[in-house]
Image (cartoon, rainbow, N blue to C red; front, side):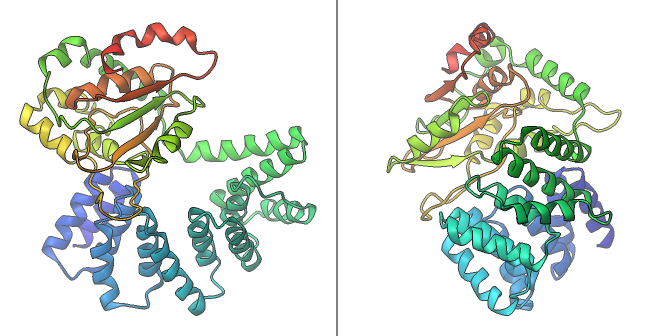
Length: 399
């Protein structure tokens, strides 16, 4: 069991969450009482923002250890992901009476308050976190990320002193660099601001797994596969429900704003960016391993009509009857299959941003047609991008 759990940890570190989830599921099948594996599975699900299946795992863990700090904080996070913010805050507020000196708990509570729109209280919670642990970079960055917070000279001096520490981990250091960049930007000291942003980005880049040649190969495979003949051969496949609204846009084109406008309608649920599509891609073999090209997207061509429909029926999986339900996660350009909710549920307005390349939007539009009937799709273009229009002509059918 330990070996399976270790393998799952390796796969999670490689961001192959589908395989990590499978290994941990197998581990629990063989050893249902293995609490460490159950907690690891809950964390892997959290990494994919799959909140609903997290709850029964955490409930079983809490039945054994009702006071466990990690179990309770992860449970609150799951409720936040599900849009049940009040329940998350109740858990955190109870925990704060027991762990008032936990800077991490004050940070999590600040996040919950921010989600609820209680911004002044969120600032106070983040401030308390920085007081308890001045070297806690994430709390300072959370303050900066509120946009409305202006740091004082004393705040800046504290952050500079912490960022200069030789024992500071890179993850905390980059948080300070970004927070200081924001602080100097607000003071219009732009040279210092850009210097901090540059250092923060350099630290972040060292942590990001990105290989340009591999991405180029992926794009070439996508362009070769998703030809008009591909879609013509699969006409009429997928889930035919007419209710989804897909908002597809290049960076800074207003896609998030449009989603929020649509979601203000009582019959539209704004889901933001969903984790399902990257998960499907991983299941279909999207991860590129050394010396072994990925099966995806070619594996999509091997799916028959029944499999395409079954894949569509799995998206999305949130309970539409739950009040305030929201799903949020990063959705990248590998959205090879999309599907709608049932006709009697609120229409999801999903916002997709594509920051990898100008043609990423075209690829996504093409891939929408691979498995699903997309009937309402809005494509937004930022100013100055008119020359991109010819590249999108192959996707006119989706519009």
